[in-house]
Image (cartoon, rainbow, N blue to C red; front, side):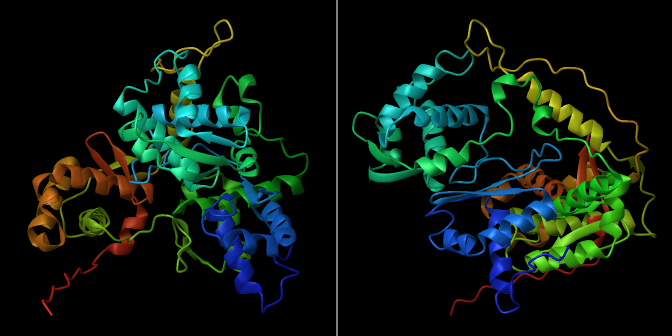
Length: 442
């Protein structure tokens, strides 16, 4: 199949921009991510529906002034949390408040205030053990406003007057009036299954089995394209044989380039999508102290793992991706509330359910200890001190932790007890030379 078949060469760049827009922002409203986004998607709506369904198994739905991409998930991904305006990942309390806000807004009229919404959510939250919402508690108010602000940013709530921040500071003095965007609200909460009937999060990942060889090949090709689009780097050893075969084939790079305008880079260990157009939400190398430290740390990790003249590096089996996924599923399932008399049960931590791990032959990767990481970060701070603020010099362990977390998100390392395993992506930065730009007074 030739993607974008009905798009002229003159319009292809605009079409690719629309594809990237929908893939990056699965929910698009009249105001989110900007006022031009929905117009771009509507222009190519028919072709987008066909291509996204055929290429990835996704479904594009348009509800009035809202476009929603319903994705097909192959696995649970812990690296895409909802975040506050300050970049702080949502915790369980904020996720719970967000879910209760959606339920309350579904029963509301065309407008609401943040105080009224808080009263409804508080009544529901106080019936759930381990949750609750006390309007007199500053911490509870801030967590609640984080959930409300997340909906406001995406156009589900449109601020008509006031400020939720002022209400969070003093609910007796501050208030905020919101218009409720019904189209965006309906599109926001659209699970593939009725959640009340689920006894495991795996039911959200299930799909009908292929009934023929052609259907199986088509499903594997879609899974391969999804992996490249959704993952910073895809290692052949982390996917099934059929998916790996599609990743190694010649059709996938051509298909993704035609759809997105982005090129696929292939190496012996796997593939990645080279982002030259600002497609990714987070980029590596990136800006900021943590990103800079991560790059510098990667250089040292590559030198440590690959230098033939250095000390012998211990190699360890890579953690089984199936086992990691099973552990994550168990953690999510452990938090599923149990119905007791029609009321959801306690959402506090519960013991994980036992899970079985798939039998796979793991690869062996260079192991670098935590002590090496600490020494490397200390050397980075000493050598490039002008690039890092006083807070990072005062807390190098925090810089090391956040840099390693960033590298793990991009597939450059895998954290293990006592250190990290260095993955092939780190080898790209072997021998990289960093230069600090000197500040000038004039």
